[in-house]
Image (cartoon, rainbow, N blue to C red):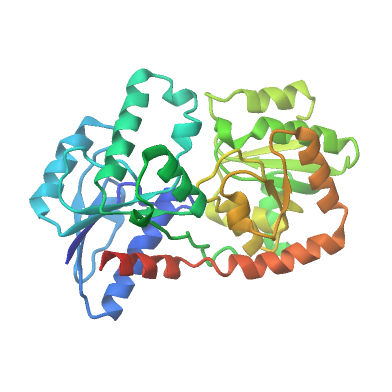
Length: 370
């Protein structure tokens, strides 16, 4: 078959859908070669990824340069898709030209915008565009890949999609997330960010469903009992969510909370390894990859007990009520002060994270194509 893949979010960084698309493409190309090329792949890129990607036998790349929710997505991208007359297209995200009528499958990573639209989506136009786009995507898809059972349940409840149409295929954990035992390797990263105490770590964006204000409130409670502990928060400051830094200022935690801004992939791995505990206070996740990355780096996890997080982390984390800062603080303190519990979660977490493979993800997807 001639199979198209929407690679407009393709990224080499450890960032959600971008990483998923990159791993999917690379693993599918390898599987296709192993099986003597049953498929030809046509990959649709934006720049700069179009110029950076190197084609291989039975792999063609096409430049789209059409942003999500843009007019070009509905016109130029549609025209290019139709021109190729593909047997099947895999859309790695739900932004599909509304008038595309040939067979396709789509991966739904989460329904965050349905439950937590955020401040960037306040305008009526954006809410309408999202609603029309995702409803069209799931309604017309031949098959839907959901990244967790929880996401599958959300899709069925929100869009009344037949259960047999949805296939759960988990994400994988990149091999670069691995334990680093030599503190000298971690030292330059800690020095760069002026981290010189034990610390809790959060990685990710600063949107409302990530629940950072409650994590900071919980940390303030925790600091009264464990003063020699810092909180490290990665990610780009978001002007739509000024309350993150405002709460730090209000609680006089400026010397105890470290904001790293965006970090390199190398520094991210180092921070996971150096952290005493990885904290994940999210109110909603379609999958929730960061706790698994932390487990793969031999770091114990304290996480929210909502949405897909208990499904993905299973019995390998301490759970808290993300709406209750006191409970967050108590559960983190419990883990921080119990070396035996830490050791247990580190050991089981390493084994658990190893079961999430990008190769396995691609094999199941490849099988679904056929």
